[in-house]
Length: 464
Image (cartoon, rainbow, N blue to C red; front, side, top):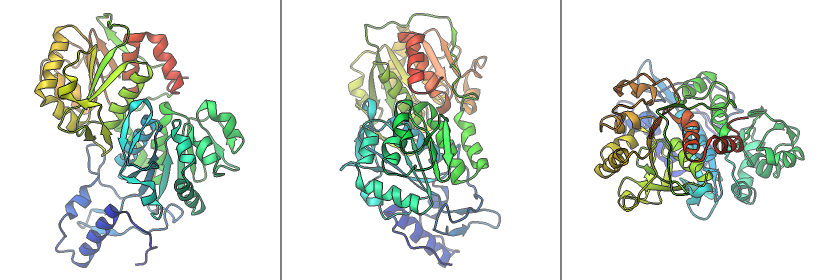
């Protein structure tokens, strides 16, 4: 068997060495082999064997390992997602998360001098590598999130420009969303003669270097482009389809709970309406922990900060940095012990199985939630957290709520579980990653009114 030689990242070299040892002595798998097989095995991502694609997707031939007569797997698709100071965190994290759910191995690479980047709206992300470490690695896909000045920082990074230009010259997939199609890809001359889309305020710039169209997601040849935060989930699912096939894209998109009709006005079911009060600016606590669902956490934080709420991100653990459910590294503003000294108009929990379990096991957080409820002050949760945190601690008693579909059997009252967002007095709950934007907008609506929420939804291209 012949392979094209490429320089591998350290983690990739380790996996390749493990693979070669196994091929030489399949009766004695080396230590760590099971981890290789199960690296991306999650509730929403099961082992699979993708259909074979032509070499236009990759010049590397995947090594194959046979674990049984009926089960086999291939080396994961390699994806590069660069990040920068000023990157739009929703676009970055959604892209990374969705692609990792597909089984792709995603390297998050900083174009700054440090691994940590200060994304828009005060979200802090720690990359896996510096982009310079990735310049000699072959990728099946390079996907650029947007955000300003993040897209400009991409454009000005000579290493990234070289890597993406080589990707295009090799006939491999590359993609961008929001400002990046115009500001980065267009400036590098990589959209000439191609149809592309971008954030509306950059369409004039895009039209000078591509055939500008207003699609939610636009594919032309090896290039995929999209418009903004509100279209990034569809963009990411489209990338899964291009990397693998429609069957894999459908498998990944199902548990995301995407909206059936993109652009329609979102709906919130409200029972027992009450005014959510605050002193001028809402003070909101968003706890995060190892295993929190990063899409849900980041969308909540980002959107509430766009609305000008004061959002405190607190780590329920010993470190400010947490490793989220799809291995995105996020940095909190403070530890929960410090955050607990303040009072909040709302405490809202993202989901993610590991994160929800950490919340449920935190006496300090549970006590804060109970005091919030006893004071008739707002609190909320999404995905696994209503079922694993609120329900067992009596915080859903007498309340209508929803949760991630597979968790709804844990709710004592399941009469409203099929709704995407449910508000019952001072409680708000929702279902999963694909309902997170509606969930956050529902919170904005309660504090600032529906016109403000719809204004934000339109800016993010979530509604028409």
